[in-house]
Amino acid sequence: MVDQKQIDSQPQYIDNPLTRAAAFLVLTVNDGDEAMAKARSVVASTGDLIKDVRIRSLKNIFTANVGIADRVWDGLTGGKPKPKELKPFQEIKGSKHTAVSTPGDLLYHVRADTTDLIIEFEKILLEAFGDSVTAVDDVAGFRYFDDRDLLEFVDGTANPAGLDQPFSTTIGDEDPDYTGGSYVVTQKYLHQLGDWRKQTTEDQEQVIGRTKFDNVELPDAEGDAQKSHKTLCTITDDQGVEHDILRDNMPFATPGKGEYGTYFIGYSRHLWVTEKMLERMFIGDPPGKYDRILDFSTAVTGNTFFVPSRGFLAALDD
Ligand code: HEM
Image (tube, rainbow, N blue to C red):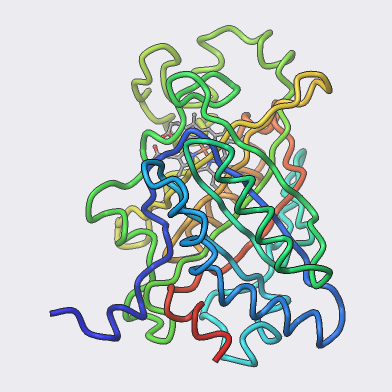
């Protein structure tokens, strides 16, 4: 028998299967109590807005997740205590590359197999927000051949599956007020595709840590040797336990402007896990031996949000 607590702590649509398309809509809430109150009521109604759109095309997958950033947590929740790890995205300055921190109070991660549903949802949502928010970014992601990113490697392979997935992405008893919630980190990367293409396939494979054609893992580098992206993003704690995150990266492009990129999105139960990955990528392990993916990819945004359970979201307007 399902009880009310389980219903309230049901996660948003984190376990969505990979879709053909997605939108990453980042908003800031405008100044003033009126804007905050309006934003709060629209965020609370997200579940209903999803239903309004989904029913119109039942044969297609359609979901949306909303994340709330540290800056507007108090205003949007009426001063509820913060999830234990919630804080603004911290800039990470490495010897050569920087993980920048950029404005963003709300994230809508909208997923569907066709863009009509995504655009329809965004249109209705933004009409509801009216002038209470400003859209600071809106990226349309598409699924490239064989689930590859625009560096042409299969992306998403090592994602947790089965029971590992909720275990890695949703908060349990460690933060009882926020059971069913998740931290999400996003970064928009622009690729220097011309430079990447000049590398041999073997060199590209060393950067990623997998073979390009058939997506097979390469052995980890020993000692202080240059580590691949895959190895730098493998996080093991002091007890030898490996901690995963769930990624749903999407390629995006505007070929006429020469713009090709990857929108990174990572859901996690513990924010520190994603932060550790970023530290290892940008600072390096050992320091200086940063992730070589960054020599061909520039992070132009960086945000952290909390994706509360469906019950928490709906109760915001009570
Ligand atoms: C693995 C691409 C940024 C975390 C991979 C793989 C590719 C890839 C091709 C190997 C296949 C797979 O397991 O998915 C990219 C690109 C990025 C990017 C193109 C942006 C330019 C990031 C960031 C993080 C991250 C910012 C975390 C903060 C991971 C993790 C793995 C992975 C956890 C799996 C490691 C394992 O094998 O256990 N990425 N990635 N990636 N990436 Fe990224």
